[in-house]
Image (cartoon, rainbow, N blue to C red; front, side, top):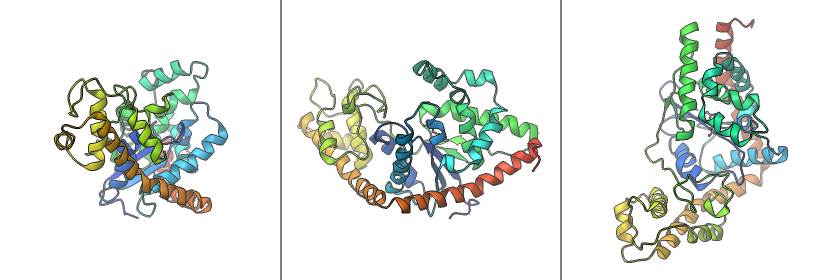
Length: 335
Ligand code: TRP
């Protein structure tokens, strides 16, 4: 494993909840970049199962999806020998530091979090304390590993700001305990939109199955979804304002083939949207095929995957416990 002295540490988490685990959006926007960053950075990636239970989950499904999500990280090429890859709840330091961080979080600032406001209106029957202190746990996730960089989407940026605020407050009281993390926008990160409403982000929780492609979708399913992708009433494949559907398909195609928008426009000059959709669907299916195959292979050997989970938790726990002990001492907890 990298020594952590020479390389910067990058950390990110992904929730295991939601149907079908990861979408093409998660893959292009996040997970694929995670595996590309492992040469340059010292990486820590985890399945944020403790965050998932802030919303009511079916216990059997959550358990199954945690295994699947973990296997999928490996199938996407994240190497557990080089990185910390683990399940959040397997490393008890997260919950412990999460509690301590909640004691340094103010009611007012937590009340202002847009995700809390959104989720508490969406789940009005279950506005629980965990939903409220969610950012304190997320701060703990990040600070335990002294992460330099955190790749997050726009929806999580406020939580990262909050993490910096809490860390600064703590450091001002007790000295330099925590490193202040910066947001990281990967060079190839792209935001993938819904195939049906291309002005909205592709989301796991979208009720319309045609709006999203899952990493594990079979080839024929992927092709079908792309065929029914919403475009516009024009005919030209070009990236232009007002052509959200085509722009989204071009973004997907570009991020997989590596071509520019101009090159794509040339490739499809004189051809219709129909041809273009088939090509985009096919390139997505081809890109995801090895991931799907590796995932299937891993899931046949559950023991092996569980073994890697356990090792991952041990390695992560080693790093996390050092920070936690320091924090406990500073705060005055009797060690
Ligand atoms: N809250 C993040 C999300 O829902 C997941 C997450 C939990 C996370 N802890 C994190 C992301 C720490 C980055 C760093 O997407």
